Image (cartoon, rainbow, N blue to C red; front, side):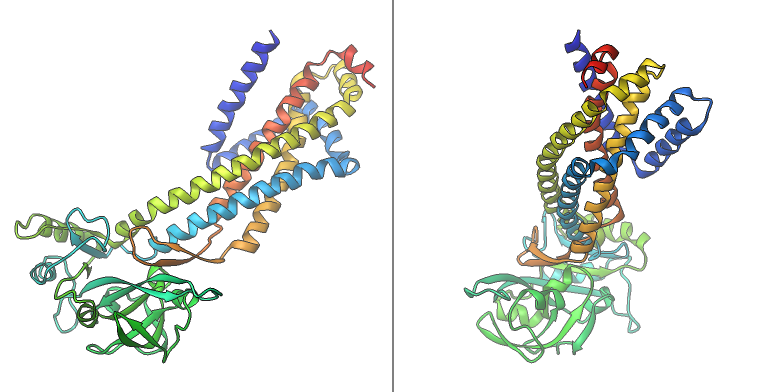
Length: 440
């Protein structure tokens, strides 16, 4: 009988946790309001009893600072680590999302998963530029940047052993700055077409040694001069830009390009542009918005980072749950006579169960809030870099602790508190009154 009761309690706990994990913050607010009404409206006798029992337990927390701190610190650690790891995934995905927009499109060879594996001929580029939906500048020229992507090994900043990392060099046309108006030169000037000159993203400056205006780099066995540094707030900041014709000559790429980035007349022009290219029998080209393209590029790495974060958080959460269980079992045992007396004078089992759980979840909420705030203070905006999926270079990005991640951390904290308080609470409510009175 006890086995069936415990098994039913476990199933109920699992079901509650599944619902809780999927719950948006608005749902949590509704639950909190309903709980407050149940506790404070006199018509609900069980709620009033729960409030009375909970107030007594919460008022004695100061007398149990040591044991209470075990729960708070344990859960704060879980939430802090979880939020910090998930902030990596959030920052990585946001950096790539910011690299695209709905009114720009990227065209690549059909079936190409990324720019590196794509090749477009000169004839392809001419037809892409003439497709419907392409915006034109004041001179009537199509705003299209035909671009090449190559890799360059550069010394990593701060490496004591002289390690090198892969940097992405992007050959672009003048239209690249029109297609991406967020790219701003913050030091120096733009490169001059036809010359071996580079402008460097400020993210690349943070990652690699010697990248400053006036520096000379050896790329493709040729000397290149850094003439400017740019900022864009997206993945482009990790790249080195130069004139596409010079890049192709240096790396013997001929007249081909990896991709063409196009400014559309409007977001709604994508369909006409895309259909024109994909229905053209002379082309084997696919097109999508740059927002869609870069969002897909982030999916794989974002998923990996989230799996790592949740796995590590789950392992730590198991320890925090056991800590909460031990603490609350001890707290319930020390108050056994008090709980038995309340039940003897007419208090039901349900108010006792909920009161003990409210006490545990209050400690969990405090721990979750502390862990989340520490993660936000330490890691929000923290600079990191990783190999970009589908790319040839390192991607520089900033960790982002968003409101959504903080809410996710709070949900984890309350879930740990729920599990840690449920079984001690159930024991307190099911223990025979006469047995409880004899325990002290």
